[in-house]
Image 1 (tube, rainbow, N blue to C red):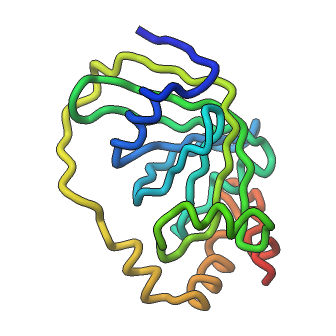
Image 2: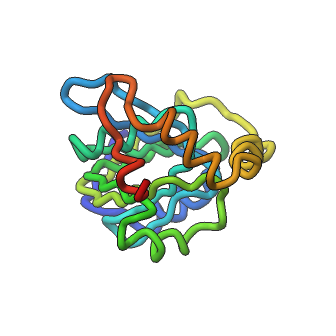
Length: 184
């Protein structure tokens, strides 16, 4: 059953690195709760209590808006193959934009991904595992390249305009500051 840890163990890190998908949950005290699936080899472990993940341009920007007002973030991994396991990382996140001093150093940790717009730097305060016995078996068939192709076709200027139009406010009207932070 559920077990709690103060930090990531080597076994947790090995489990995380074999997963093709993780989920991110954020909310402010007054906003809708947002849960987003993430893939694309976009998470790195920087230490037993620190992870970063790269966020790409998409239809919304909820995580960014939320953590700028309430930095709580939960990241969840679950096994769809092999032994059942759910791994949750609870912590406080900081959103980094292209104009921030840490951006370039952290971006180097990831493969080039078209449409990269933010990096979330998460300091963990709790790691929890649970059984995952109700999670179904699913087979990994490959990555979808649609978002990367879309971002590549738009180009940097097209992505900047898209973010300006579609990514400045959360569903609840919370500013993301993406245009200001990117220097536009």
